[in-house]
Image 1 (cartoon, rainbow, N blue to C red):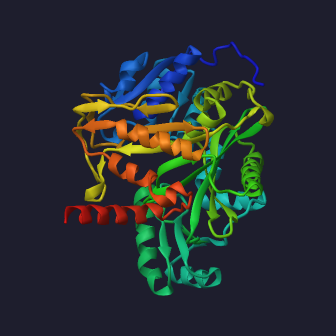
Image 2 (image 1 turned 135 degrees about the vertical axis):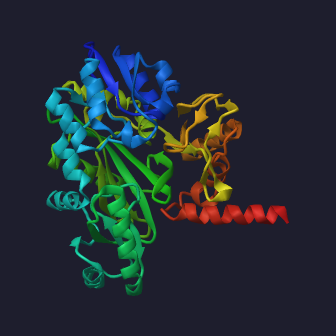
Image 3 (image 1 turned 45 degrees about the vertical axis):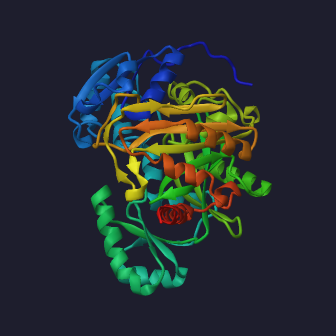
Length: 465
């Protein structure tokens, strides 16, 4: 069992993020008796997180490049307000080795892994090399691809379809599926340009593409004393443009032996780099064979962390803070008990019927779902103006059930109750998705959302005739 620790890890923490994750970190700070300092842009001065934090400091205009992505401004706030630690949340600079290194140089605890660990996992080619040394299963692929002709030669050896991927990438940017040789030149140029624009680096590599693929990831926690555990796996296969839509834990329809192997592989990689803090090792799982392969490691808290918290009862953000303070991990693997099933869906300010067009504006009605086993992580409220400057996510709805079908039933009830007016939202699509026969029967893969979008459009057309 976990040992009680009464010592407050830090006196004051800087939260270098916005939205619901900033609210989430404020809650964790309050629970631990820690003062929270929130860095905000001009656009976020009146957000829920700003109302909750102990101190708020404006770091620049709405533009992310002049505020949330400006390391010098964040460090000035951290040192000026005497913060002992900095939590980067996710997105923005959460996986920036430069921010982690700046904290290390200032003697401020970075609530995440070391700058070297971020660097080693941030470059996908380097991560593949480390995974290979750790003997973690990997898809056939290549080293750096120099040009389209080089890619053609390598693709013939790997066999089509293949995927071009950005070495410095993430979030689906710089990724292109190449199904035949005649597509390579065009898609290579496109992936290279996209990677250069997004990351300032156009380095690409090739990887075998799995057509019936599932996205399964394992949550890990490691401390500074050599202790490392996993908190089970999540299935994040429902994705649109490589962005997750619905996540759940445990991953459904997995053979028991595969479940144990994938968890073990994640720990093997994390141990190989002596990983500290919260991280997620991601895998592609072949839906036809249940063979799994290393994809990447995210060196931060994940958007979908609540489903792991729900089935284990472990507060991941609180553990992040304790680990960063040098405390011994309070749990051993045998202490982690998995109960029931949790599902999370992301509610965005987008209009599904119009190609998921962003829909910023004033929220004129906000009626969140309530009831047993329902959790809503959000920064929104009635009267909140959704800005156009940032990610469109409004909330994460998480439900717990005794089993998967119970969780789906509870989620449907919660979605039916959820009302948002003033901005377009993805609520209609989420309702369609979680009641879709393929989702209910756990026949999920990474292209299922595209199928759902097409089917939903046909249903609407038919109903209007």
